[in-house]
Length: 494
Image (cartoon, rainbow, N blue to C red; front, side):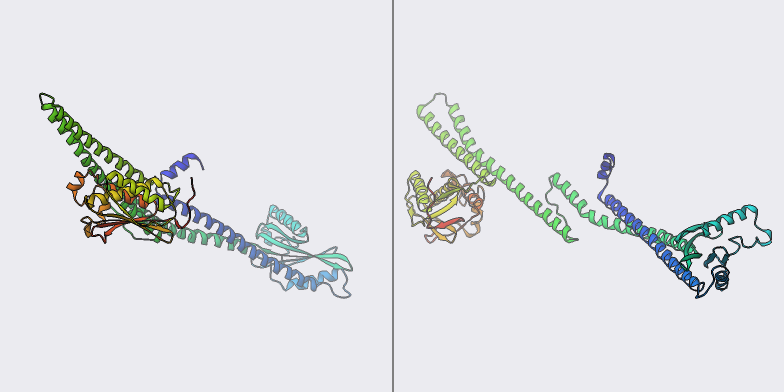
């Protein structure tokens, strides 16, 4: 196939290409079937003719030779009596010839062999010469089957059979039959295939066009939907109908659009919230600088207060940017759970570090020992976020409690506080980005609204879960579970 033909086929629609392919396949199958039937019908009729010729030659031979028969005139006489019973040679009958060496020829077609003159002088010398040549070819036919062409009868199938007496060949029996029946059968096959094959091919092409149109219709709808999506409209969906494969494709395509729509909505919400959160400290910094710039004389105390507030807002903005980067990394599954830690040592060390930084006391219950395969840095970040969240909501004299338990190959870690708790309708939303149950208090405490979102992203990236419930202490309980824990096993030391 040339490059030009490939490019033209590639530019053709699926319906046209499918129709062309099926038409070519049907035409090739029809041609192969025609050749097989054409040759098979001719071969069967030819075999039947040869069988009849062999039987006829055997029957003639059986009547020629008997005990005590004299070769020559005696055999010739018997041959003439036997052949006289046969009808004259014609397109629908056999040719019988007995050539007795040294005596003569007996046949049911004497004119063909020149044994009698032309009728009423109708034949010219040219016709007589042609018949003489045909007679010579017939009499010279080799033993077995052969084919000669006669002017009046067309192709004739011959069977030459030698007659032996006393171990010596004294005559030849030749039987022949025109092959006109073979020609008629093959012509009938050709006509049948021409008519039936054309009608079948036309019907098949119509069916293929309809089938191709139905097959390509979902793809066209998908292309139209993809065009709407490319234009920014994510509300379009494919109808789930048709064959199983088409339904599966439509469901997968719609599921992909659902995820894209959700991702774009989350991205839009995230950008909007991040812009708002970053704008707040920037506005505060700008306000402080503008107030300071309007003063004619720089008062050291005023400058120091402005610098302190600007420093606080910059620190808050830095924490927000760090949290955004951490969340982006966990969203991209940049978690490598290749560290093997002992929770009985790791969790107390992490929690105590947060408690010292926040100048708060946190109660630690017994932590099960074993080997937990995690990303140690991310697990520490998850724990710090949960403990800081509990401290911020428990108040100066509140109680924060951290506990853990093993459940098979899972480790369950619980952080309780005695704060105001989380309303039931917000227990899923608290893990969304920038969600706050008390927006004003969280901002005053310096929270970015991303701590719990980062915690959930880290837990999910490890193949775990996290949820919020009521705490026995009256506040909130945050629980996360991680897989790949082996209780009682000592982790490998670095």
